[in-house]
Structures are given as structure tokens and as C-alpha cells.
Image 1 (cartoon, rainbow, N blue to C red):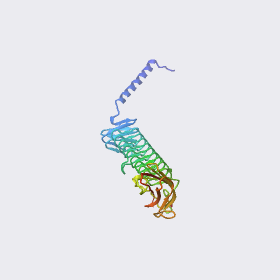
Image 2: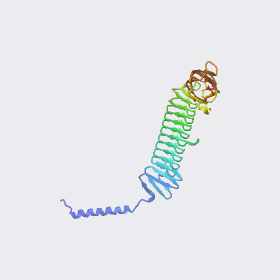
Image 3: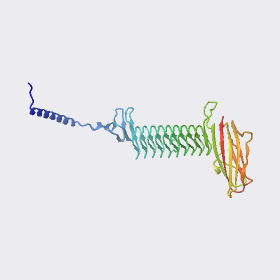
Image 4: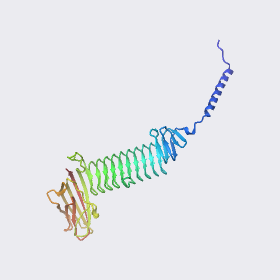
Length: 383
């Protein structure tokens, strides 16, 4: 026969269960988590005079420590990171510096910034890395936007006020330099500019390479817009190459062995004395560098003008070659006349010559002050 429980018995059972739950909760709440074993589930900034991140997965400074889940920003005078800590640690040193996110970033001086990324490092004042990985700055007032393995290096001298936009393994070791993007580009001359491309190198001050690959700009103010394997080693030379012939001795590509160039020479004359034009004008210190075992076919244009408007123009074509260090005009000799196209002054003359294995242009004016500008355009081969 089924027996029904009375409402009084049921309510007594519920009351006993509630009292048991309250007793258990009271015992549990009295056991607080020790302060040195706190678990932190969000990002954390930790400062200490001496900080150790040990393999036991704890941060310790004196008697306090914490288990941390998530990125950690560490500010410390003395930091030791254990070999298997497992933390994504950013090290923030210096005053007024900031690391917004990422892992294993480090700022070592004042007013530095790292936005995000992995293993980026800034070691001089007022420089920053926005993102990427393995980027490194050791110069002041410099910037790397993103990419990987880019390096602005002050160890060879001054390298401040320089920037790398992005790319891979780009390198700057001078001041006022810029690499926009690309890979394995190098700027070793002050004020050098590489827009993009790969394996381009600037050795001359204020030289530029717009893009392309394996181009070398060694002359001061020289320029290579693009292409591949161009070699601009004269002052203010513009060069463009489409390929490179191989050295038969070792099968290496020969820079500048299939290219065209443009040169500008100028000078002011104040007498009838024969005067050589130079790539740097009246400073008169830079001639055209001619390549070893090279041959050029060139077109020479010369323009002259005096203060009172007297003008003249001259033109000549020629071929010049170097054989094992000896430079001559093809057909023999080391000088050639450059005839006038038209001239207001009969006494003005122009000639081309080989001077110290370089192509030289000389002019003869009159007693008035005259300005001279020459342009040489070449087709070049090296063998």
C-alpha cells in the first residue's frame, strides 16, 4: 500500500539540505587564496628592481609571485628569463616608452614604441617599430613599419632619422636613409633611397634606386630607376640595365655589362683658356668613371651661353674602349674634336679626350663669362 509523505516532512528535508550547503560555503570561504599564489587571467604589467621568470612558470620579486595567463609587460633593472617559462614577455625599459602588444618585444631607451609583433627591439631614443617580427633599431629617430628581420644599425656610424617601411631583411647603416619595401636591400650611403625590389645596394651618398633587383648605386647623387644589374658608380650618373652578362672566369654576373647611362657635365669659363667640364660643375672634382674592359658608344651634346645671350651648340658621336686598363678611342688616339652645330662665337671650341682612363670634355671660351653644359648618353658593354 502506497504511503504519501506529509508536507511537513518534505519541508523539513529541504531545510536540512539548505543548512548543509550554507555550512560548506562558510568553510570554503574561510580558505582564501594566498596572496603569493594569485592567478591572473588578463594582461599584466610587472615592475621590480630584480625580476626572474623561472622555468617553474612564476614571476617572482621578493616574496610575491603570480601565475599569469596572457601577454606580460615587464619593467625591471635586472631580468632573467628561464629557458622554458612559456611566457609571451615584453621588456619595457626607459622613460616614457610603450609596448602596445605582441611578444618578446624590448625597448631599451627613452621615448621608444613597439606596436605589436614578435621579438622586435628598439635600443635608441625616440624610435619605433609598428609591427612585424625580428626587427631591430639601434639608432635614434628611426622607424620600421612592419616586415621581418629589418635592421637600422648605428654601429658603423650615425644612422639616425632613417626608416624602413616594410619587407624582409632590409638594412640601413646611415643617416637620412629610406627603404620602402622589398627584400635584402642595403643602404650604406647617407640620404640613400630604395623604393622597393630586392638585393639593391646604395654605397654613394644621396643616391637612389627606385626598384628592380641587383642594382648598385655607388656614385654620389647617382640614380637607378629600375631594371636589374645596373651599376651607377659616377657622380650624378643615371643608369639603367636590362640584364647582365656572365664573367667567363667564374660565371658570376657582371654589374653594368649591359646598360645605358646618362651624364651631365658643366663649368663656368671667364677667359679663353681651355677648361675641362666636370660632373660636379665648378667644384671640378668628379670625372666619368670608365669600366675595366668596357666599350661605350656615346653621343655628346654641348651647349654654351654667355651673359649677353651669345649661344652655341656642339655634337659628336664616338666609341671608347678599355682593354686591360688602357683606354682609347676606337680608331686610335686619345682626343677627338667636337664640331659646332651652330655658334654665335667663332672662337668657341669643344673637344673630347681620355684623361686618367676617364672620358673628358674640354671647352674653350672667350674673355666673356660663359656657361657650358654637356650631356653624354651611352650604350655600354663589358667583356
